[in-house]
Image 1 (cartoon, rainbow, N blue to C red):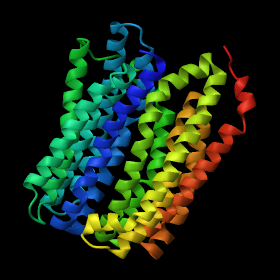
Image 2 (cartoon, rainbow, N blue to C red):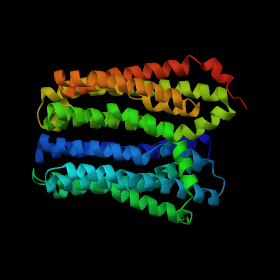
Image 3 (cartoon, rainbow, N blue to C red):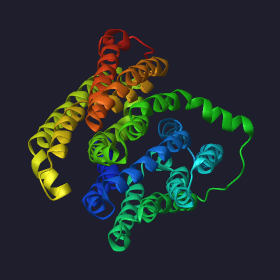
Amino acid sequence: MTERKQIIGNTVALGFMQAANYLTPLLVIPFLFRVIGKEGYGQVIFIQAIMSYFNIIVDYGFNLTGTRTIGQCTSSEERNTAFIRIQISKIVLLFATVIPFIGIILWLDTPQDRLNYFYGFLMVVGNAFFPVWYFQGIKKMRILTIINVISKFISIGLIFLFIRESTQIGATILLLSSGWLISGLIGFGIALKLENFRIQIPPYRAIMKELKLGWHVFISRVLVSTYGSTNVLILGYYAGDGAVGIFGVADKMIKAGSSLAQPLVQATFPNMAQWFISQRDKYIKMRRQFTLGLSVVFVVGAFVIYYLAGPIAILLQGNKDENIVNLLHVTSFVILLLPFGPIFSNFFVIEHKERKMSRILLYSAILNFIVIIPLVKAYAEIGVLYTLIIVYAFVSLMKGLNLFLNTNSLRNYGNV
């Protein structure tokens, strides 16, 4: 298989996987709005936001560093050692999240609330066991996609089948989490069987080495979460579950937009890293082409969302709710800035600029905290979107200047 065909095939496969993760929930938003209501759906989104913090800890930096490590292995024996070392590291991190999770459970007032959060935590368990990084590293994207798509559609199908009353918020959370749990356990089992991996506990130093390799990526993800999950929590505190439920519509569309960029970004990461080492001019050329190409796609997508806001609102609500229409209009401007974050981050990692990336994201997190509360107080869910526009624009500008103003020096950096 040629390099071009391999990238296209991996991109298509990852595209289907991202669609399962982010687009399938869009299928049930109108249904959940009607059955459990805005407030009920807001509770679902709020709990998922809490669980996303635990997912950040469990994922750590392995989706980049783990993929790179597996891709560089030259034998089944090396992959066995690397797989077990990384997977055990993820399980250690999963156990580390149990302590704060128990703290949250004890803080809650009612048994039903505790049960709802337990259902949400199953998503974290499934994520911990799903070795996405392994399948990406060995370029077996089709297996990854089949597992993910089937499990997500089972989850969505069960929601349509069993959710019938506004009181079934816990059942909704359980069924949404089941997709993650099913895909995680099946994916882990297939990975073990694929190369007959032998499970053995790696030494302490090996685990610490893996954690050290992913540290800067982890810190970057923690900082990015401040204008993701944290903003949802702030919105819930100041504006209530209803505002969170309405914002959930925009949040799903933003995540769906991100899912369009991620397949190409992830599929090209191993190739771009290799080009950086052996074909520097090709790397610089492809870096520019990827950026321009994704920019065009997202400009078109933003225009579509802006001009079809009315029909989208009718699809979601059954009527042309002006609040939803205004929400979608502002969301379209967020969509414009979406592709630059993930693709620029990969360039920073490839070019060994992780520290600079972390610094930029630290400044963006500070900026986020400065503007989020006054904007939420003034504009509720729309205020969160205004915050995202400000922060995304800042990050895109700072990363872009750092990358593209140093092209000449990049050609002379570490040539081999």
